[in-house]
Amino acid sequence: MTRLVGIVQARMGSSRLPGKVLRPLAGRSVLGRVVRAARDSGVLADLVVATSTDPADDAVVAECARLDVPCHRGPVDDVLDRFVGALDAHPGDAVARFTADCPLLDPEIIRLVADVWRAVPGLDYVSTSIARTLPRGLDVEIIDAGALRTLHRIATDHHRVHVTSYAYTHPELFRVLGVTLTPDRSDLRLTLDTERDWALVRAVTAHFGDVSVPLAKLADWLHDRPDLRALNADVRQKRLEER
Image (tube, rainbow, N blue to C red; front, top):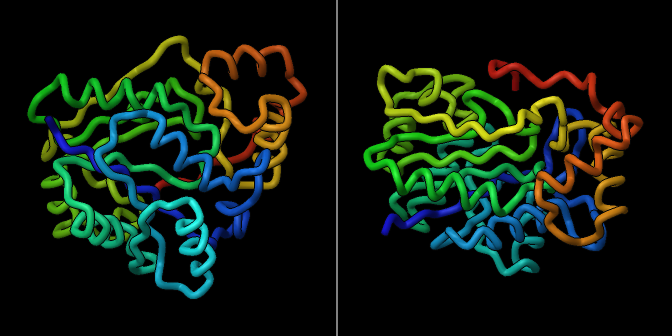
């Protein structure tokens, strides 16, 4: 069976919400919630956090030790290099990429995408964000280890920050598959990038507590709370080219 390694990128630097990955939510750090969701998916042979060599990220390393999850340190801005370094230290056939600003990640969606990956031989890349129907913050992507190393050789500029973006913007070079889940809930924003995102995420965890909430249950709850959905509805997502 394909050995799938999960890599979570996490660092303290954030232009809009510094230190967000270690903020507490219902007694667990944001990073801790991402790590738990990845582990609870049950599909990963290994899990590692990829952080930077910036001294500010010593705090991330300390949290990884507390969570008993391995940690790899690499360049601040060359996140792709960080991922390849983490893969070198924790070998696998493919990588499931996670970002530490997604504390509402659903383990069931991770499991579903891994099942698709294993059911379609020869894929270079699979993702739920190619034709987005999921809320931002719940996407899952998997890239073949060989494809990731190819990206490391050829990708430049912002593609080295976004790790996999060269693959899905060059489908003529890579075998790419999009996974689309229905119903379309892409109007919801469940990532953590601004203070308004934080207000929504805190409201969710204040209600549900320290558990991973299935997307359908969370979406139904938010459907009846337009005041919460409005908190971050107009937050602009950075363009791919932006740092």
